[in-house]
Image (cartoon, rainbow, N blue to C red; front, side):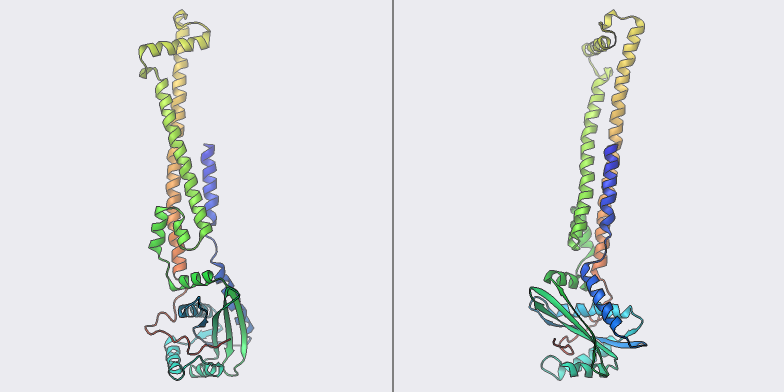
Length: 337
């Protein structure tokens, strides 16, 4: 039973980190956005227009700029100091500006857009490439004065940024994650881009499964030893040999030379050996069943955990731009940095 306790402890410790924190990309963006909002010292509630970021990187698409802005919208909505411009108004102004220009908007056009929206602030930026990284730059601009109140730049790998975009866009499917973890423990976690948690899930299930297989084999051996030691399953010559061996062990003489009391002790000795082997079989059988239940529970937990991760990563924010039937014009009011 010591192995069972070890397996349970390993499973428990391995599964605790499965509900780890959100991706570091979001934490980085959260810190940058929080710092920018804190830098805006004007009292009272402010209306902010968040526009899709201009994409200047060959590794990213227009969708990248939209999803970065989506995330920014969600953070502004969580701050009581800001009100978000209604999406329909923003869309209308963006389309009007796009129809009147052929290139990217300069800063004066951005400020003009903010005035048309009756906004106090414009939040915009770019996604560009630099030194092998994807560089996300953002600015918070005061519409009335055109002053840049706060700015921030963060560098991410292309894969980090694209994974972030997939998370926000809802590309990760819960069913897909569950089916993967059903087939191979931990595979659903890899699908949701949580490799460490995938390894932990695989280790927990594989460890318990291996222990279960071991005890199943040991149970089979113990059962065979129990049956083989029982005189009821022996032929007459085998029974006589068993009695003689027991007599020699207990009294140092053959079974036929023993008194009645001594033969009773031999019979009791043989029965005790049978009972001991039966108890050993029962113990290993119970352990195998318990480990089998724990393996099934760990596998089910692994599937459920993959579903939770998928649900968390499939839609981290309520979409603002992408809920519109008409696509936003990303180039309309974005600044080039």
